[in-house]
Length: 226
Ligand SMILES: *Cc1c(COP(=O)(O)O)cnc(C)c1O
Image (cartoon, rainbow, N blue to C red):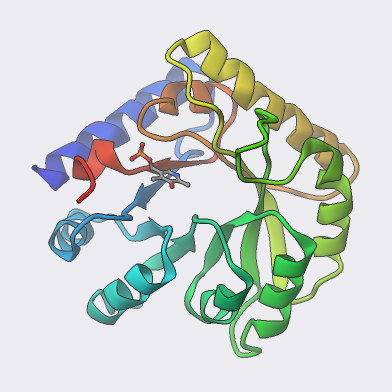
């Protein structure tokens, strides 16, 4: 697995899609989703200039952080959050993409160390409206975002989703379009959001077409997970 080569090729794709869909240059940020990937692969990514990593499991992330000590690395939590993990998450991450409950938002706010800047968060939305999916229901997003806006130690940057997987580009795009519409509605209500965290290895193009600002890419950079 040539991590450097994969990163160069993903970045070129991102650039090409920015051009294709009339996006501003460099408006799509590449987050390397590194759950289940070895520290050696992550070190290769750092050497190739990749400084933002998304992790799903707290213990795995904390042990990686002990080795990848470079202060310029940005750590994003993208997994589901149990309430007994919020303290360590609030202490160790720059971003949390997967906030879907008031209780979790409040705990992250209260447990964010005062010497650190507010924790950047995204609300995870169950855009496909499936019972089994993670994320908050569409009907509850407004009350959750209002609540988050009242908390001083977290900063609500935007929305995140993991849609039902589809093979067709058109169906992928339709899912992301729903999140983008919700994002635009919230900004009309002055929530000042700047982040749409959507798009993974298999649906990155559709996400960029629908105004994604952060794509979370795992296997296309690192290969299959261990
Ligand atoms: C694993 C994961 C990704 C990356 O998925 P790939 O298909 O490997 O690109 C992105 N986002 C979340 C939340 C994930 O759990």
